[in-house]
Image (cartoon, rainbow, N blue to C red; front, side, top):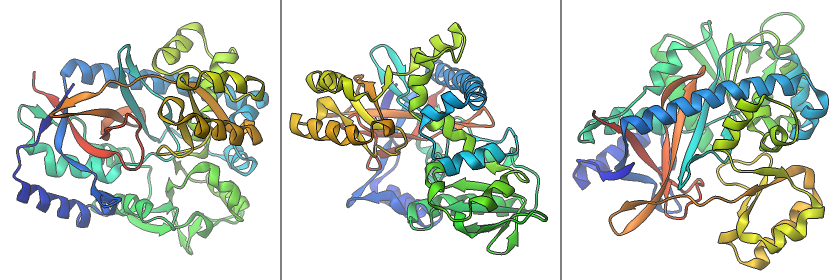
Length: 397
């Protein structure tokens, strides 16, 4: 794995960024006044590509087994921190195989590590689609593997009108839905963009968004937020009738408490458990009786909310001063059921001129099959919304 500069002049690259922002709706290309698109490429070898994809496909299959077991066992399901309203919807869902997931692989001295699973509402659509369209020809001696847009379109549920549901208070979420709406229009599929609160569904008839009937729904709204909605009954009826991508049952895999569950309970067989343990850090439910251990071994632990995204509610012990760590532990102790404690691991930087970049190799799977990359890199070894997108290419054999 290495970082290489794209074969592009600064003026040409600036024009590509404008196209990315206005044609591909990538409005957050700049964050905190800084461009978050690198004029470089993350180059991986064919072997690294094959290993990364094989790893993610295997983990996806094992997580499917784990989720099925958890959904059959109420005492296990209760430990995952899923809000009661979301559980109501999960119990009503129509079973289907449609899914869009992403696993972010972090390079360490002992191999790949996956600190969390992006199974509920993974992002990065705009970057992945535009990265292939705009930057693929700028990478010498390598090609962009996978095609997220084609994989998504080839795996669509049947129907002539799709509902695109998102958190309407966030422009970043709207940009994800607009790029998907563009793709669907290319296939002649009408779309309705709406908030989840706009869904209505009676006992009879099809679910509707803003009054328009829809045949299936693409959801870019965190599953744990459904507890704030007033139309839970409508959602329960709707998910029993039409496919929702992703179904709310993906919260089982999204919950970081699942990492602790398979270590504490006979959830999977020995081989499947060993596979998950190989690629994930040791994780335990936050325990107030172990607070002194977390406190005295600050550099060995990471504190996380069970549901949190883009680095939200994550405190890495080795990167924060002791008072901040102590405050974070005190805050977690107020609602210990909402947190996990995870063993820290040390990511490896990739040299990039005078600096080192820490890449997160994001592997998309659509319906369980490889669909492309959405990778990011940063200088701190902690991937947040301020990490930079970097196009991923596989070097030619």
